[in-house]
Amino acid sequence: MTRTVLLDAGTLGLLTAPPLRQDAHACSQWLAGLIRAKVRVLIPEITDYELWRELLRAGKTRSVQRLDALGDATEYLPITTPAMRRAAELWAQARQQGQPTAADNTIDADMILAAQALTLEIPDVVIATTNVGHLARFVPAESWQSIVP
Image (cartoon, rainbow, N blue to C red; front, side):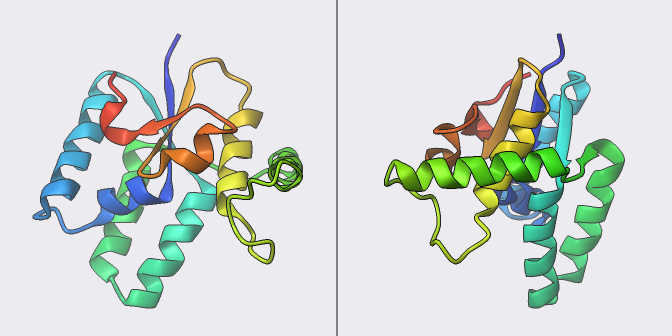
């Protein structure tokens, strides 16, 4: 069974950062290792949106080009209606438990990302993130550095 790794916005941001940055280079090497090992790597639509809007706002055209290029080596995971409905359930659950992951007036992209992972309904899925705390309450999530092929 092939492991499936979804990229969170923080990890995706490192992959599109200038390659001379040490952390960006390390993350790129990590991704290359996953791809060589035939790990299925997905860019969820919600993380693509989060990063795309920030790169456009900041005028980081080279990073936008790197984000586009990542599509050649990975798969894109579109947002579906079942994922959005599951995200709404997660959002409500977090608030009912008194542990929201974002302010009530935000879209809460973490819940959409978690729901995208859950609605894949595959056993070996993990979100590669730079912030394990919010996501790990709902779905398998690990620091990108700790995910090995």
